[in-house]
Image 1: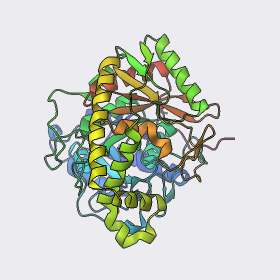
Image 2 (image 1 turned 180 degrees about the horizontal axis):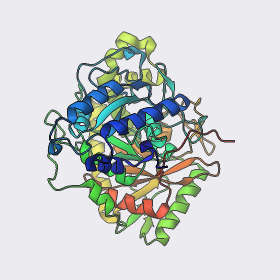
Image 3 (image 1 turned 135 degrees about the horizontal axis):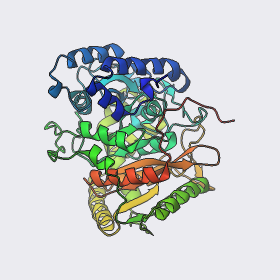
Length: 473
């Protein structure tokens, strides 16, 4: 008996639909059946819009084959922080619990223009604040490797959907670490691209570059397929730029090549890292070295990235969410209130200094990557923690001061504007996933995907077949 379609890779589904071996409707029906069987155990996809997706497929099939798009017929989930026209969109907040937008965000337009069928919204923490996916609207999303553990965040629902076969690909976003940490926690691939590659908006802060859109997938090849369709020039996004006419990220991933050189940093000179995670990552580095990777231990000088990120994050929260604070303060979680109020306290001098230092950090990181090629780090500093815990408060006996502290391996890279990808690299002694983060120069996604595909092949830790939710003994 052949595998059900929901177990297939995204690349295989797209190729089989294009060849006429299966219909787009069959792929969506298979996904719907998997959601019915699994989502009650993990709470990843609280909003379904299957009728909308089936209608979209009917309209898509009326077009000539050449106009059906890169994803023709591939089902997609959208994070519940991006608007989908006519579909409930809550941003994980009681303040928007019943909001139904009339227009979609630009990233949704891009996915649908490429033939992707949007059928569900994935769970996210309120306004994407925090790397643990829970909110007062839909509750907690659970890690399928152990449903007592966190799935990470803020794209936690998206990562869980991919890991369990409820999605072939999921759209997510990444501000501090929101594509990469859930990928690490769920043993999937999360790609944070360079700003401007994938359109985003509409936004009252359209020039910001800390938060970007990107895909979650089970393999590097599937993530590359996703980027091929999501990357799009959209004149409405002032940061978007025309794409190279012959660029194929999927072909780059299929041409798996070790980077000419790499630097490895356990902590970036900034983070506390759990010894169990460190052991898994160091074993992965040993495997890569034995396979031929030329790697040096080196830290880029990112010491000021913490203060820069906190200032610019606070400014962004204040700029985007001050109206929600004024109108719905009692409905917002404490972390969101804190972020907004920190931003409202900032002066023009604070913001100007942070922007100037961000520019210096970017130049420093580019010079570092010019010398070393690819930077490799652990993705997240800990294994998935108990889901009831709001955030990580201590690592290796070191007390953390705020809910942001444990995310520094992610946001130190975000500040520099570099593309980064998290790939699975092994599991801890308790059987929980660990991710490896690879970082490249801005707009070097093709080289990054090629290197990541080579590492994936060496490490043999990719989740090529979805899993059923489990509870550790």
